Image 1: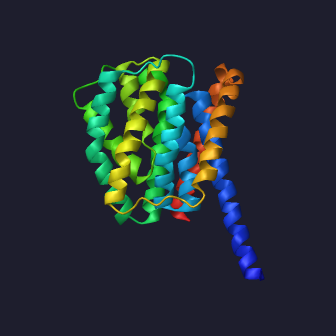
Image 2: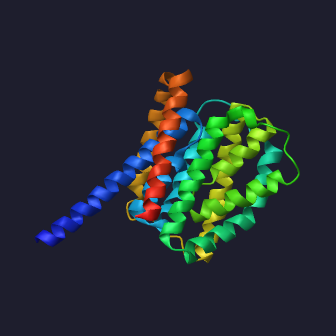
Image 3: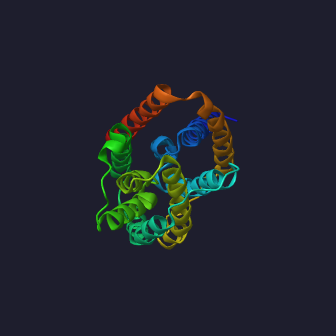
Length: 253
Protein backbone atom coordinates (compact mmCIF):
# COMPACT_ATOMS: atom_id res chain seq x y z
CA UNK A 1 0.00 0.00 0.00
CA UNK A 2 1.45 3.37 -1.03
CA UNK A 3 1.46 6.40 1.22
CA UNK A 4 -1.57 8.04 -0.40
CA UNK A 5 -3.69 4.90 -0.07
CA UNK A 6 -2.58 4.45 3.53
CA UNK A 7 -3.52 8.01 4.45
CA UNK A 8 -6.89 7.66 2.72
CA UNK A 9 -7.71 4.45 4.61
CA UNK A 10 -6.52 6.00 7.88
CA UNK A 11 -8.77 9.01 7.31
CA UNK A 12 -11.77 6.76 6.61
CA UNK A 13 -11.06 4.71 9.74
CA UNK A 14 -10.81 7.87 11.81
CA UNK A 15 -14.12 9.18 10.45
CA UNK A 16 -15.80 5.88 11.26
CA UNK A 17 -14.40 5.95 14.80
CA UNK A 18 -15.71 9.47 15.41
CA UNK A 19 -19.11 8.58 13.88
CA UNK A 20 -19.38 5.50 16.10
CA UNK A 21 -18.39 7.58 19.14
CA UNK A 22 -21.08 10.15 18.32
CA UNK A 23 -23.68 7.40 17.99
CA UNK A 24 -22.56 5.77 21.25
CA UNK A 25 -22.74 9.05 23.18
CA UNK A 26 -26.09 10.00 21.67
CA UNK A 27 -27.58 6.60 22.43
CA UNK A 28 -26.23 6.70 25.98
CA UNK A 29 -27.67 10.18 26.54
CA UNK A 30 -31.09 9.16 25.26
CA UNK A 31 -31.08 6.04 27.42
CA UNK A 32 -29.93 7.97 30.49
CA UNK A 33 -32.10 11.07 30.14
CA UNK A 34 -35.07 10.11 27.94
CA UNK A 35 -34.16 11.91 24.71
CA UNK A 36 -31.19 13.45 22.97
CA UNK A 37 -29.78 10.92 20.50
CA UNK A 38 -30.16 13.09 17.40
CA UNK A 39 -29.16 16.24 19.26
CA UNK A 40 -25.76 14.70 19.93
CA UNK A 41 -25.22 12.36 17.00
CA UNK A 42 -26.73 14.28 14.07
CA UNK A 43 -24.26 17.21 13.98
CA UNK A 44 -21.23 14.92 13.95
CA UNK A 45 -22.79 12.44 11.52
CA UNK A 46 -23.60 15.32 9.16
CA UNK A 47 -20.02 16.56 9.33
CA UNK A 48 -18.41 13.11 8.97
CA UNK A 49 -20.78 11.26 6.62
CA UNK A 50 -22.62 13.98 4.73
CA UNK A 51 -26.34 14.85 4.85
CA UNK A 52 -27.81 11.88 2.97
CA UNK A 53 -25.90 9.15 4.77
CA UNK A 54 -26.41 10.93 8.10
CA UNK A 55 -30.20 11.12 7.68
CA UNK A 56 -30.45 7.53 6.40
CA UNK A 57 -28.38 6.28 9.33
CA UNK A 58 -30.49 8.35 11.72
CA UNK A 59 -33.68 6.66 10.51
CA UNK A 60 -32.28 3.16 11.02
CA UNK A 61 -30.65 3.96 14.35
CA UNK A 62 -33.82 5.63 15.57
CA UNK A 63 -35.81 2.48 14.90
CA UNK A 64 -33.37 0.48 16.99
CA UNK A 65 -33.08 2.86 19.95
CA UNK A 66 -36.74 3.74 20.30
CA UNK A 67 -37.73 0.11 19.89
CA UNK A 68 -35.41 -0.78 22.77
CA UNK A 69 -36.94 1.99 24.90
CA UNK A 70 -40.47 0.65 24.50
CA UNK A 71 -39.81 -3.09 24.40
CA UNK A 72 -36.89 -3.96 26.67
CA UNK A 73 -37.37 -2.10 29.97
CA UNK A 74 -39.73 -4.65 31.61
CA UNK A 75 -42.57 -2.18 32.06
CA UNK A 76 -45.75 -1.18 30.30
CA UNK A 77 -45.11 1.86 28.06
CA UNK A 78 -47.08 5.02 28.84
CA UNK A 79 -48.01 6.37 25.40
CA UNK A 80 -50.48 9.21 24.87
CA UNK A 81 -52.17 7.45 21.98
CA UNK A 82 -54.39 10.24 20.69
CA UNK A 83 -51.58 12.79 20.71
CA UNK A 84 -49.17 10.33 19.11
CA UNK A 85 -51.57 9.58 16.24
CA UNK A 86 -52.19 13.29 15.61
CA UNK A 87 -48.50 14.12 15.59
CA UNK A 88 -47.67 11.23 13.27
CA UNK A 89 -50.48 12.13 10.86
CA UNK A 90 -49.41 15.76 10.65
CA UNK A 91 -45.76 14.77 10.21
CA UNK A 92 -46.47 13.06 6.86
CA UNK A 93 -46.43 16.25 4.71
CA UNK A 94 -43.41 17.44 6.66
CA UNK A 95 -41.53 14.22 5.90
CA UNK A 96 -42.02 14.78 2.17
CA UNK A 97 -40.93 18.43 2.38
CA UNK A 98 -37.84 17.55 4.40
CA UNK A 99 -36.81 14.85 1.91
CA UNK A 100 -37.00 17.40 -0.92
CA UNK A 101 -34.93 19.84 1.13
CA UNK A 102 -32.33 17.14 1.70
CA UNK A 103 -32.10 16.57 -2.05
CA UNK A 104 -32.06 20.21 -3.14
CA UNK A 105 -30.31 22.19 -0.42
CA UNK A 106 -26.50 22.28 -0.02
CA UNK A 107 -24.82 20.80 3.02
CA UNK A 108 -24.10 23.97 5.01
CA UNK A 109 -27.69 25.23 5.33
CA UNK A 110 -28.73 21.77 6.50
CA UNK A 111 -25.97 21.80 9.12
CA UNK A 112 -27.22 25.21 10.26
CA UNK A 113 -30.72 23.73 10.60
CA UNK A 114 -29.26 21.00 12.80
CA UNK A 115 -27.69 23.64 15.02
CA UNK A 116 -30.93 25.59 15.27
CA UNK A 117 -32.84 22.41 16.12
CA UNK A 118 -30.30 21.63 18.84
CA UNK A 119 -30.70 25.11 20.28
CA UNK A 120 -34.47 24.62 20.30
CA UNK A 121 -33.97 21.40 22.24
CA UNK A 122 -31.69 23.24 24.63
CA UNK A 123 -34.39 25.85 25.16
CA UNK A 124 -36.81 23.07 26.10
CA UNK A 125 -34.40 21.79 28.73
CA UNK A 126 -33.69 25.24 30.14
CA UNK A 127 -37.29 26.36 30.37
CA UNK A 128 -38.70 22.98 31.39
CA UNK A 129 -42.20 22.88 32.75
CA UNK A 130 -42.34 26.64 33.15
CA UNK A 131 -43.59 26.98 29.56
CA UNK A 132 -46.35 24.44 29.98
CA UNK A 133 -49.75 25.78 28.89
CA UNK A 134 -52.88 24.23 27.47
CA UNK A 135 -52.20 23.30 23.82
CA UNK A 136 -54.14 25.18 21.17
CA UNK A 137 -55.74 23.75 18.04
CA UNK A 138 -52.79 24.62 15.80
CA UNK A 139 -50.09 23.25 18.13
CA UNK A 140 -50.33 19.61 17.00
CA UNK A 141 -50.31 20.43 13.25
CA UNK A 142 -47.38 22.83 13.66
CA UNK A 143 -45.40 20.39 15.79
CA UNK A 144 -46.13 17.44 13.51
CA UNK A 145 -45.28 19.16 10.22
CA UNK A 146 -42.12 20.78 11.60
CA UNK A 147 -40.94 17.58 13.25
CA UNK A 148 -41.57 15.58 10.09
CA UNK A 149 -39.61 18.06 7.97
CA UNK A 150 -36.70 17.97 10.39
CA UNK A 151 -36.80 14.15 10.48
CA UNK A 152 -35.97 13.79 6.79
CA UNK A 153 -33.97 17.00 6.37
CA UNK A 154 -31.53 16.56 9.25
CA UNK A 155 -32.93 13.77 11.52
CA UNK A 156 -33.35 16.15 14.52
CA UNK A 157 -37.12 15.91 14.91
CA UNK A 158 -37.51 15.98 18.68
CA UNK A 159 -37.71 19.66 19.73
CA UNK A 160 -41.12 20.50 18.17
CA UNK A 161 -42.62 17.34 19.68
CA UNK A 162 -41.12 18.12 23.08
CA UNK A 163 -42.60 21.63 23.01
CA UNK A 164 -46.03 20.19 22.22
CA UNK A 165 -45.88 17.53 24.94
CA UNK A 166 -44.74 20.10 27.50
CA UNK A 167 -47.77 22.22 26.62
CA UNK A 168 -49.86 19.06 26.87
CA UNK A 169 -48.65 18.64 30.45
CA UNK A 170 -47.32 15.12 29.84
CA UNK A 171 -45.55 13.36 32.68
CA UNK A 172 -41.87 12.46 32.15
CA UNK A 173 -42.73 8.81 31.48
CA UNK A 174 -45.56 9.71 29.11
CA UNK A 175 -43.35 12.19 27.25
CA UNK A 176 -40.50 9.71 26.94
CA UNK A 177 -42.67 6.86 25.68
CA UNK A 178 -44.84 9.03 23.42
CA UNK A 179 -41.73 10.50 21.80
CA UNK A 180 -40.36 7.00 21.24
CA UNK A 181 -43.62 5.87 19.62
CA UNK A 182 -43.77 8.92 17.34
CA UNK A 183 -40.09 8.54 16.39
CA UNK A 184 -40.65 4.91 15.40
CA UNK A 185 -43.63 5.86 13.23
CA UNK A 186 -41.69 8.73 11.65
CA UNK A 187 -38.75 6.45 10.88
CA UNK A 188 -41.05 3.94 9.16
CA UNK A 189 -42.75 6.71 7.16
CA UNK A 190 -39.44 8.41 6.35
CA UNK A 191 -38.09 5.38 4.48
CA UNK A 192 -40.44 5.66 1.45
CA UNK A 193 -40.07 9.46 1.45
CA UNK A 194 -36.30 9.15 1.24
CA UNK A 195 -36.48 6.35 -1.34
CA UNK A 196 -38.87 8.29 -3.59
CA UNK A 197 -36.63 11.37 -3.43
CA UNK A 198 -33.54 9.23 -4.17
CA UNK A 199 -31.81 10.38 -0.99
CA UNK A 200 -31.76 7.13 1.01
CA UNK A 201 -28.06 6.28 1.25
CA UNK A 202 -27.06 3.72 3.85
CA UNK A 203 -23.50 4.22 5.15
CA UNK A 204 -21.12 1.37 4.39
CA UNK A 205 -20.41 1.03 8.10
CA UNK A 206 -24.05 0.92 9.23
CA UNK A 207 -23.50 -2.30 11.19
CA UNK A 208 -20.73 -0.66 13.21
CA UNK A 209 -23.03 2.29 13.94
CA UNK A 210 -25.86 -0.02 15.00
CA UNK A 211 -23.48 -1.83 17.34
CA UNK A 212 -22.36 1.49 18.80
CA UNK A 213 -26.01 2.48 19.32
CA UNK A 214 -26.77 -0.77 21.14
CA UNK A 215 -23.71 -0.36 23.37
CA UNK A 216 -24.67 3.24 24.13
CA UNK A 217 -28.22 2.26 25.00
CA UNK A 218 -26.98 -0.31 27.51
CA UNK A 219 -24.40 2.10 28.96
CA UNK A 220 -27.03 4.79 29.35
CA UNK A 221 -29.14 2.53 31.52
CA UNK A 222 -26.24 2.25 33.95
CA UNK A 223 -25.56 5.98 33.78
CA UNK A 224 -29.17 6.74 34.67
CA UNK A 225 -28.61 5.42 38.20
CA UNK A 226 -25.66 7.80 38.69
CA UNK A 227 -27.02 10.89 36.93
CA UNK A 228 -29.46 12.22 39.50
CA UNK A 229 -30.75 15.67 40.28
CA UNK A 230 -28.37 18.48 39.44
CA UNK A 231 -25.74 16.18 37.89
CA UNK A 232 -28.34 14.86 35.46
CA UNK A 233 -29.33 18.33 34.26
CA UNK A 234 -25.73 19.56 34.04
CA UNK A 235 -24.71 16.60 31.89
CA UNK A 236 -27.62 17.13 29.50
CA UNK A 237 -27.02 20.87 29.14
CA UNK A 238 -23.28 20.45 28.59
CA UNK A 239 -23.77 17.93 25.78
CA UNK A 240 -26.47 20.02 24.12
CA UNK A 241 -24.30 23.14 24.15
CA UNK A 242 -21.38 21.27 22.59
CA UNK A 243 -23.65 19.75 19.95
CA UNK A 244 -25.10 23.13 18.99
CA UNK A 245 -21.64 24.67 18.69
CA UNK A 246 -20.41 21.77 16.54
CA UNK A 247 -23.37 22.04 14.16
CA UNK A 248 -23.15 25.80 13.79
CA UNK A 249 -19.39 25.59 13.27
CA UNK A 250 -19.89 23.01 10.51
CA UNK A 251 -22.33 25.36 8.77
CA UNK A 252 -19.78 28.20 8.48
CA UNK A 253 -16.47 26.38 7.98
